[in-house]
Image (cartoon, rainbow, N blue to C red; front, side, top):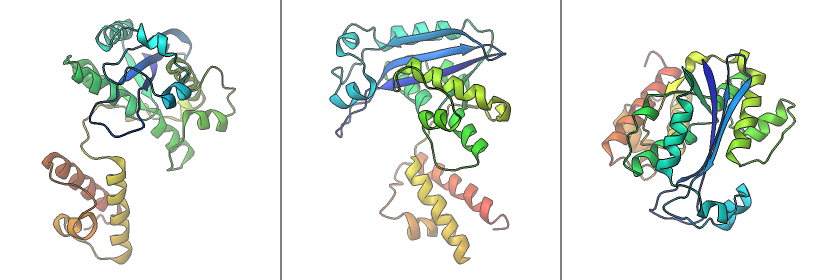
Length: 253
């Protein structure tokens, strides 16, 4: 089993737009079963939209515009990356949070490519694993984890390959404390973390007041005018999340 530590950069924007954000860089390192780095992958990607990087992204990543201008598009790069991954007889992807794999899936679909490879791949969210290890709930950046673990940082933050290497160092430090059975596969989500956090806090408030409500009444009391539930998929997802949180706090309810 190889461990693939993955990081991406994408062309975020400073203004509202219906146009999608896209992956502009993929970086990954391959660790063997002894956690030794045996290979790496790095490639820039020329996006279809926002091909001119804004000042924030250029400052954050340090990616030169001229290198983006001559980079290959997503279909070619993702095919090369998939072939690179396939050199392993078996592998487990590691990401810091779920955003990296989500962005790859979204771009795959945007380009009308088959997403089966990515939705079928197993990945481990190292951020969640690290938070469980530290017994904390607030998210931390890779850079913060590196500092907390006393790792000497090398390379440039917010460049995909360098971030993948830093994440690999965190993995090496805590791998024996991780339960890799908590690996998962990509699943579409129709709600966001802010909406789920709102439900979690509201359920706690109900528990403190000992005034439990069914989903319909709960929506009227806590979510009306705050969360748009016109999408049936989103409504079903948040209702299931509500029931899970309710079961955690009041199993008998």
